[in-house]
Amino acid sequence: MIKFRQAMFAVIFLLLSTPLVAQNNYQVTLLRAAPGELGDLIEYVKKQKSDSDGNMMIMRHSQGDHWDLMLMTPFSKPEMHDYSEWVDFQHDFLAESDVSWKELIEKDSEAGLYHIEMFNAARGLHDELLEQRAMENIYYNETNRDGNVIFVTKFGSDVDNFTLGFYKDMLDFATDPDLTDKEFEDAALKAGFESRSTIGLYLRKFLVGHNDTIATKVN
Image (tube, rainbow, N blue to C red; front, side, top):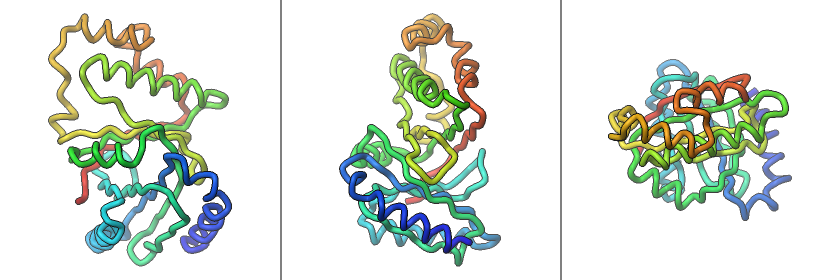
């Protein structure tokens, strides 16, 4: 089944590769290791990264989802890898972002931890969900934090979009800026929210599914 899905995905890539090359498109691969195979899988993926001159981000699941590794590479040509020797589950899909690979690598160079949120939009609310993600980034910027990189799925997954936040470590992720309650509230209002306390509630209006994951960096 894994090889069949890989073959079908490669055919779709071949059909769509020409118009996609000029955009910020990324191949995303989620892998769940078979029992006892995670170490060998990581070593194989690290070799892949080395062979591609470092053009791969490798994120190792810590909590919040059912995969072990998330791989991201810039999409330039159809390139499928067979991980069936080490995995029980492989999910490949294509996503795009306003952020270039060069910018992603710069963010990744200073990161050791990732916050990954994957969203399934409610019917007819895809655009509104993306608008909410942009609003939340404004809120982060107004409170002296970097916003999340927003990715929109092009094909291959039921995930409509996902965001990727880059942090040095868990302390960096968990520590709020040293701001007053008023400053946080003003930032939420400037971003377009009714208040700071309703940011999460507003997001839920647009969702039928949401996975919130922490991952660490594999060099």
